Length: 303
Image (cartoon, rainbow, N blue to C red):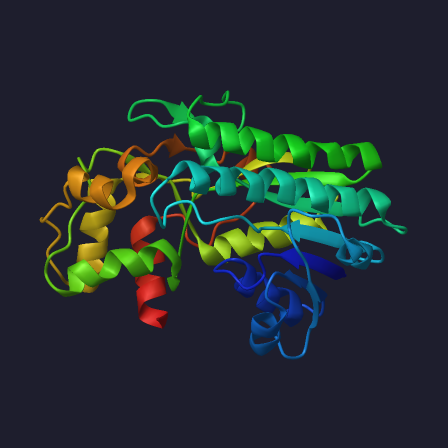
């Protein structure tokens, strides 16, 4: 397959590109920074694009068998100023709108769009359990996810199969885990906030395998939670991380410290949600890393 990918230089996208190449497929990279992408992928076709604007880049979608749309402004890396919140929304809503526009115009059209979303769709809760049938929440991230998915849904009007994957927190060599490990290495690790909030996670290898399955299986359509089947509370995650690193995990990071750093954006980490991948499992998807301690052990042994 020839597979167009946005967000290909990111934490998930770069691993997906490797996997596609290993299986004999042809990735086509869409990027805002062509020079950086060419350094990362010197042997691949790279298209420069402006994600939120129509343009000649859209013509490159024609002839692709599939599109994987992963691009979006980082959510939990800086304070949520009104401007940053608008960028978070626009990068997803308009970015998806322009991808769908390109697919609709393409001749021949891709067979499938695999579109990222997030478990932020459900809102946060310490007590509720969410699966793919659960209603949307009503906070900022839930609104972003609804707008994001609504744009993706329009691709069905062009007769293209749509798979929406609601990502949990992706664990791998880098990403969120890279930020959590340093305090443990200095014997200062521990849960963030109360420790009671849920942490719905997925190993990066499982996520990439799920994307590959979505590309290859014509019977997969609609929304799937891209989370491991065993979410944990933050206190348990910290305990398991401490075990794997052979470090104590008793020193909590107080909520106010994270709120001082990230403001409203801290709620991504401080509140959380228990999300189960019921539909993903019902389609027979096999997880390599369903248990968080095994996932952490594998990541830290190979990093």
